[in-house]
Amino acid sequence: MRIARSLLTGSLLVAIAFVIGQQVAAPPAAQMKSFADAFLATLDKDQQAIAQIPYGSEKRVDWHFIPKKSRKGLVIREMNQAQRTAALRLVRAALSELGYDKTQKIMMLEGVLRELEGEDRNWERDPEKYYVTIFGTPTNTGSWGMSFEGHHLSLNFVCRDGQIVDSTPQFFAANPATVMNEVTGPLGKGTRVLRNEEALAFELVNALNPAQAKRAILSDTAPKEIRFAGEPQAEVGEPEGISQRELNEDQQALLKKLIYTYTNATTEKVSAERRDRIDKNGWEDIHFAWAGPTKPGIGHYYRIRGKEFLIEFVNTQPDAAGNPANHIHCVWRDLTGDFDLPNK
Image 1 (cartoon, rainbow, N blue to C red):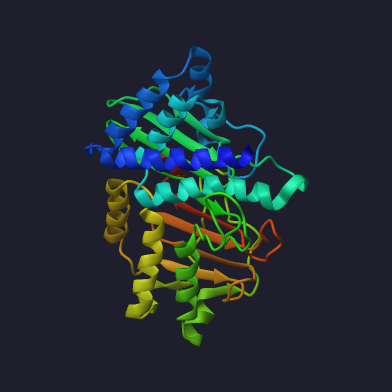
Image 2: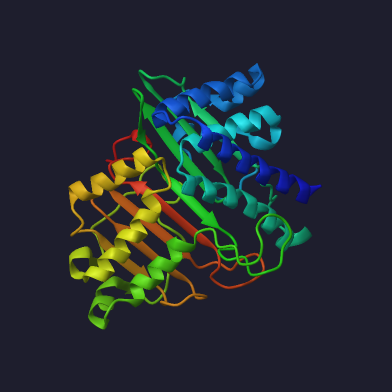
């Protein structure tokens, strides 16, 4: 029954991706409003009271990716088929094809974790234990928000006056980072959900010459976790590591490709706005910093700091089968302020 449920969830997600792709493109915020209205219309009054929270609630900035018994919003597994479809259509409307693919596979990894951990698991693993929350009333003339969150996933959006004005924190994670065991279900051995986030960074750090590596590598030991996890804003200090201007042309191209792996998780319009802001602020002072060994299988970490963005990545924990450094956490944050709030 559990495996069948996981497969059903995967089929539903894929079907929704197809349906969305067939629709005539509309502005992203307009799509989100339309699908938010449609989702809310499928709910009864009790469900609406859970799924819809005032925009000014403190819960709007209460985010995290750790396992929890419950979260804000309405959980997918307590929805009927029509409600699940409507909820996931809303999530799909906020993301690119790439971002939605990562999202659905991270959800499916809960089934992999359940199988690998067996009866000894400390936390419930369920691909449908993900929560949808609408903040305020979807509108084209004011502010409202949406979040989609569960274990290893936190996606947060704010729409204002018909535009998506913030889409952070954007958190993705994968355990296992690479599925190294034979497992049942839609994700098989060899699946690597966040491949580029890790592989491109290894390629970049190993392309540095000794003098560059001395600048970029902050420590031989990686931190256990990303900074500012669960905090409404990322309070950063001065940039550390090596700047883009100190890289050669090939290294700069790798850095750009790595950054775009994060920017391109959202709709094309929002992704383009992210890229345009980086171009406007200039690439020269973007810093890349690394901690830990520069080969897989041993805990490693990096961060990329721009004027208005922060990327952090850590892979230090073993996976559920005990394979070392096979458990990724990574995040994109807006240093002007997550949740469309000023970062003081």
